[in-house]
Length: 445
Figure 1: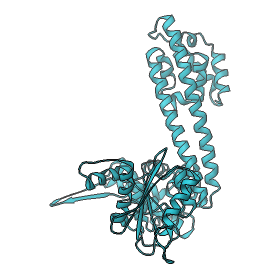
Figure 2: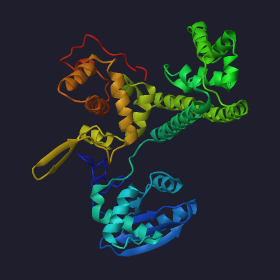
Figure 3: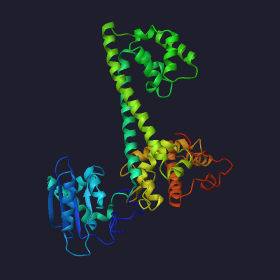
């Protein structure tokens, strides 16, 4: 079951025909086997009989051909192509964008779930583009009430989501580059690892990258003067304790360390500079996408609501808004939002056994990770959040469990604030703690 639908979200066939749902169950169902080249489109009727099949390109003409086939399914004046849901295994792509722009309802289906259906309907697990398109349509015909169409998010949120995804990719590349750099330094330059091992960011720090570019080998680092180190630190943006830090680094580089042969050390230094260039590029991309995502987030009308919650800064707010969206009908209850975000527990009961576990599947994993950071940041911004977390810990909850419960509580508040268009109020959210201290809105990430 889709996490959007669990616990109260509206299923297929329960809404109007404005592109998100249908007043009555559809008479026809479509499926699109999406690919980079030709796309197979199959349409079946309520009995499961294939009534149309075409192959189209991902082009304006391909969209027109799909819409023409859907219009020709019935001559009744009560029939509209917008009553035909189309299942597809992606949420993105030009073909999806073209169909959505034409008002055609699209139902994204998880590829892993589709693979299970393939074995259910065909024991031999035969696969072809045509049968896959028909399979997607069959899923909507038999289990359409377990799925829902694309959320009606605004263009602003869709643009924000693209920037947030780019920021995620940049941060992932930055982390990968830092790991590669550390792995290489470990083989010939352990002093560089030791120099920043106790500081936040470690080798990703701008001053660390600047010094490594200045002295790519331990031989060159040991010859650096205190003034040269201090000038490099200042140029990289350090403003506090520059001389003390320069003296500490000079002492680290001057210690006796195991060394590679000179020729090998020089070659490894050049290899490190190439890896460092990739890391610098990733760091610039992360900084740029973070600024773009935060700027787009602040321009959204719902940004003040997000920023009013404790611990929710512009970056966390951007990630939350991009994942949750601004479709007011997407999550009809706070419980549905908690399930989607992985904050609601999952109960397994069979016979006399019963277990309550955290949700690890059918959740938005990026939203779940953001929620962990958000809950942690709220501990120092809200007395109520801190008291709630402490109560969970006193009851025996582990650190991640307590944070997850706090995250669920924060999502309840967020859902209420968005539904009623009000800002967070500490005295209302945690009346038992008291309203003596109100957390600062828009606290930093």
